[in-house]
Image 1 (tube, one colour):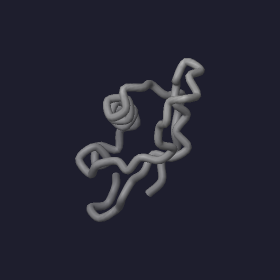
Image 2 (cartoon, rainbow, N blue to C red):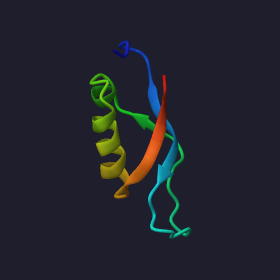
Image 3 (cartoon, rainbow, N blue to C red):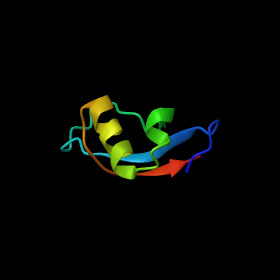
Image 4 (cartoon, rainbow, N blue to C red):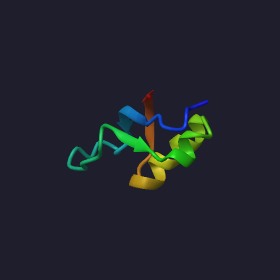
Length: 63
């Protein structure tokens, strides 16, 4: 589980843009504490999609 003061980031996010290269999406996103505390990759995945409106193929997590 993530410690109280640790920041978690999703990095190297591979967005699904259906080949539309004009879409500008972040390669890194800081994950809010309330989601990071769950330590649940599905919740983080949902957060990323809800934040941007795009699905993704994957990401890495950094603390």
